[in-house]
Image 1 (tube, rainbow, N blue to C red):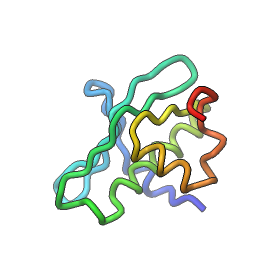
Image 2: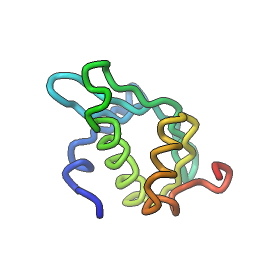
Image 3: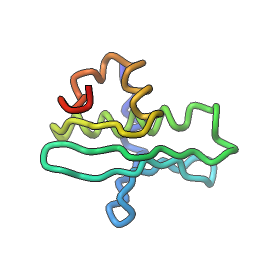
Image 4: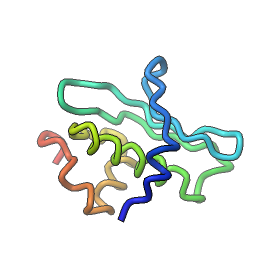
Length: 100
């Protein structure tokens, strides 16, 4: 089950080409590239103080919930993003065909 509060908290910073999740005055982010019909997640970064807190997972949940809402698939180039999607089978349908 998805927590929609993560989706609402994720910000699409189009100018910086990244999704952001503010947490305790810091920002976890996922850099992306948009292509027709899908998003390519190139990098996920959490500040050292937020690593291991679940912040990056909440970010990914929000990004993937937004991808589903917009009807796009996702190509996770980043190891973290790929591992997150594989660990959460509820997002299996979002893998772009070239990402499998």
